[in-house]
Image 1 (tube, one colour):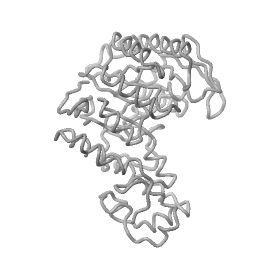
Image 2 (cartoon, rainbow, N blue to C red; image 1 turned 90 degrees about the horizontal axis):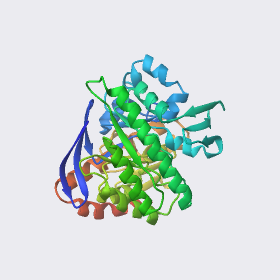
Image 3 (tube, rainbow, N blue to C red; image 1 turned 180 degrees about the vertical axis):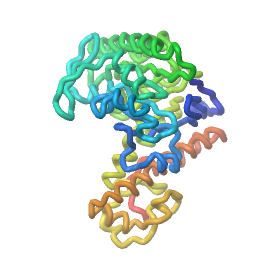
Length: 376
């Protein structure tokens, strides 16, 4: 894997992530396909919307259908008919979210399946083994996602554990790729909670181990926006400039703009897909709640400025009807639109960086990324 910077204004960067399955233009948004599917979308529709890379999840595919099953069925790309790059989360965040069902030790995590209650154990070596079995193009090191709020004492212990596990992940990964001609990448993860000096320490320790790319985790876990932005602006610039920088789990577009300004390149979030299924749609005029009665007889497209399949063919009134009737087509059309909107937003942002106009783009987007509105 390689990473090439193409343009930049301030800390904002325009680049190309070179993977064994193609180029990913950055800043990049990765639609979340947790269980080897982006909910309500076919792989062909994802490509049509502009997706170049998707994210899938180690924890979920380990539990169902099992990583060995995916391996026997040709790996995740054949399994789900997606020809492009796939990044797999290590499972650390999912284990973090099961706080009532897990026990962390120095070596790994014992946890209870959310599906059937059976007990399982996940450690750095197994997390890497699962991701290689899946056939991931970008693997993530197994980390301990520090909860918010956390004491300094807990955060320091969590940081040390993440570093220890990162070393093991790299060791196991290098054993796997030693004989490969086209090698997948491995990203390390920076933790450190809401303490700047601990973030700096974590970044230094992860960089000393050496990874193909660097991610920042443990943000957007309940902390105030001001604290999140403080950490984003602190950590982004200290990560290596010649490697991709991935801000994990951040998808609110106002947060994305802040992070791109701080030098981050890669993002993932369930916001566009989850909101679509709940009837909240992102448009050039702001967020729209399609369930509102004012759209019942509205003949206009959802977003007059959008060229997606949904906006070209269906009215707001029809989209409201589908949602109120709980039709499956509602989820599909809403998701097609929201993902198209997100991916087009990132495309326009990349163009703005290339043209040295990122700050102007950021200023113009402030209203539409933060405002709930009804279209007039």
